[in-house]
Structure formats: C-alpha cells, structure tokens
Amino acid sequence: MGKLMRVSLGEAFLVAVDIRKGSPTLGNWVGVNVSAKNKKQVWAPAGFARGFCVLSDFAEIQYLTTGIYNSGAESGILWNDPEIGIEWPVTDPILSDKDKEAQTLSQWLETEESKYFT
Image 1 (tube, rainbow, N blue to C red):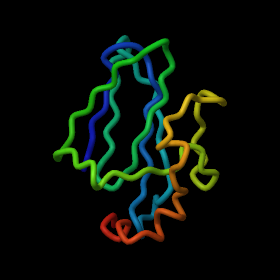
Image 2: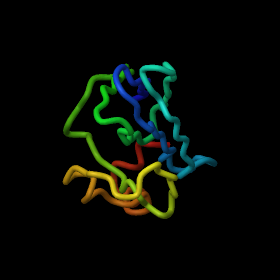
Image 3: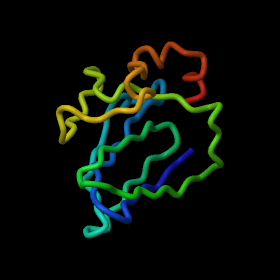
Image 4: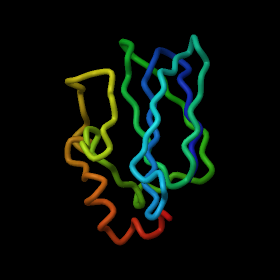
C-alpha cells in the first residue's frame, strides 16, 4: 500500500526504498528530514519499504495510507543493508527487536511474498 508520511511533533528522517522486483530503481532510496516546523511530507508508493529515524527527543509520525493495515502481511528490510546503503543521520540507533532481526533486500527478494511487488 502507498503511504504519505509526515511529522506532526518533533523531527525525523523519513525513508522510502524501492523493493519492486524488476524495477529499474530497485534498491534506490530517498531520505528526507521532516519536522513539524518544516511541514514536509514523504510519499512512498506501493512497492516501497518505509522507515524512519527520530532526530529529536521524541516525535509523532503520522501516516495516510491507501489500504488497511494487515499485521499478517508485515515484513522488514534490515535498516543498514549495505546493498541499499541508506545514509542514516545516526550511527548507533536504538532498534526494536523486529528491526534488529530484519532480512536484507536480497533475502527478501528470494521470498515468495516478494513476487507480488513488481
């Protein structure tokens, strides 16, 4: 599903990565510093992975989506996958267990579910 992301409180670095099989931009990413003050937004179309890094003491990140959340279809790509090479503004982030154990883009592309992202 597509997702429009904004920060309504604080500041965060919002990222979108193309994970569509066969896409000429597969693995390319965009990252934007977004804050309540600058009012920027990031659009991640369907077929893009999304992530964020909070840059302030706290942040509130809001999403407007093109579909309904389905936890059973949730997956993840390793935040520091060298194949993608995201230039995160932090070097030692606090990560959830899910993010610590996420797969690389190459591993994800080998999964059955990735065939639906073209």
